[in-house]
View 1 (cartoon, rainbow, N blue to C red):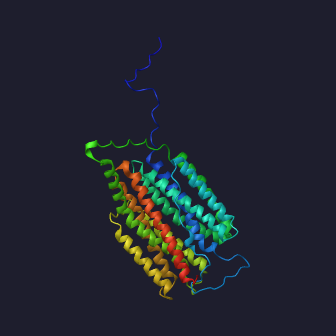
View 2 (cartoon, helix red, strand yellow; view 1 turned 30 degrees about the horizontal axis):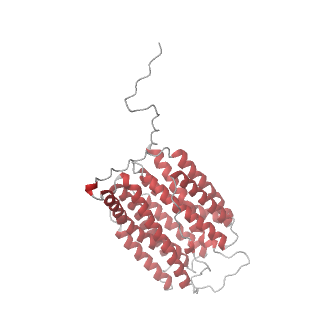
View 3 (spheres, rainbow, N blue to C red; view 1 turned 90 degrees about the horizontal axis):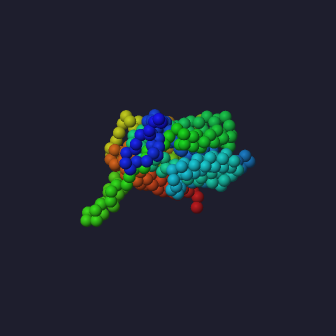
Length: 384
């Protein structure tokens, strides 16, 4: 007699159970790699900005100022936010943008084509920030957010250091080619290492008609909680990217044995080192209030603006290097703690909305800083 199949409880079918979520180490490793691959191409472009603006062989610069200005400022590196799509489509779109950007930069034959690659890379990095941060917040463990933060910090230090080393041995187009391996690595991490995402959370029950707009009030409460973190982070980012895209290029020390492009790469490298340290310290040092970091970053930006305006206010490259490290520590600390605070202050089902709000504020601040940086470059370099 054949064995009888066990009876299922009423109302249940024989559909297979969903696969269990990935283990915490896989989640952490996947988001660290995603953060690394998402930000590293943009860091390379920022580190290469001065080299991209160097004249081609046979060309000469004219109307040089004491800042050793270029005709086009590095403030044209404006991050963009791409359209919202399903997670898998967005991940592929991010990888394609970054791959296309690096390819365009490596094949660039002029300033305009190079800046086209920069714009595409900025779009990919901005879309990746929204996509993967929101995805990280949907996991029940904080390992997603903390490892993403550390990975983006590692991208800063690793990208600046890798470009420094490659640029010392290779001309600019060839120095960018090894980074073409990053987009495929991103897709491998997303589709194979991260594993299945947690099951979709049920929507909260709608309020009874007599209770008024409770759901709308809950969403507004989430937005307000996000803005409490996003407002100081946006101010930090505005000051930080104004320095990186508008002032750091103009900090030129003729007495240094390093040429201007090498001075710029050095400052970028040390800035990224500070970002890596602070973004990786989220588990060790937590700050609940970020306005102190915002004030310090604004004061630092104001001092560097005065240093660009007043000749010899900074005694040498060493002091500028120390300030670059401090700038990175402030920016990375604000980033990591803002999203870490969200993970504790906002209920898990509402965290994707909160992360999207904070990310949008940060992206708007970065774009605004790029526009102001262009104006500062024109003012200091005497452009009409």
